[in-house]
Length: 299
Image (cartoon, rainbow, N blue to C red; front, side, top):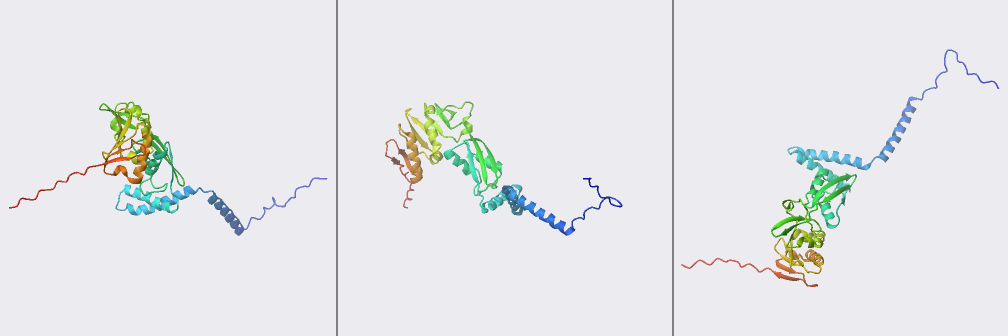
């Protein structure tokens, strides 16, 4: 079969096909653009959009407070406004704490955000970091904000757990009661003290127990070693709690429970004796005599 010869056109190349009508082209391009925007909205990260809305909205509210104020006040107003909007949207912060456990973990979570703020945009990461590092037992902290509602805090705690007072000399000790060489006691004034000969090596169980007893920890001034066999607790209000030789940790936990239920460490007691199992013996403070002015002599 003979090959088909291409058709020849008189006067030049074949004419181009007719272009699409303008109106049809506009409709087709509009439909494609709408489809593209729908996909973009579907794939858009909600945290980024949320952050923009919160920051723009917060900036608008904070701008009004800046007039007549200072830059610090305006910045704080921005965080308060953004926090209010995020909280109203149901985005309460989920605070993850790494590096510590138990009551120390709860303590860190409680100070990350300033009072009254509950969202991821309630404060700057630097402010959160400063809040955590203000705890006297924290060496350092790092803070990450993970959109839309997670704050991750990594804590490195200090080696120092207490100050050991022996023969009039103070040294810093770790959780095992061992001296921390090079640590200056003047830097750790807020740590509890352990007092007496041999108190350092014997302190490990009670120091670990104290970590989980926030009510006692807030009131404790010192552990005093008695006869190198048992402990007394000296509280900041001058009360003395006598612990048993056999189970001082259990007695400390019992004291924490009594404080939570009855507030025993805040009462007018001179001493609480927990040395006998199943018994709590208290000694009340003697009322101080009140001086009464003598009546003036009769004329």
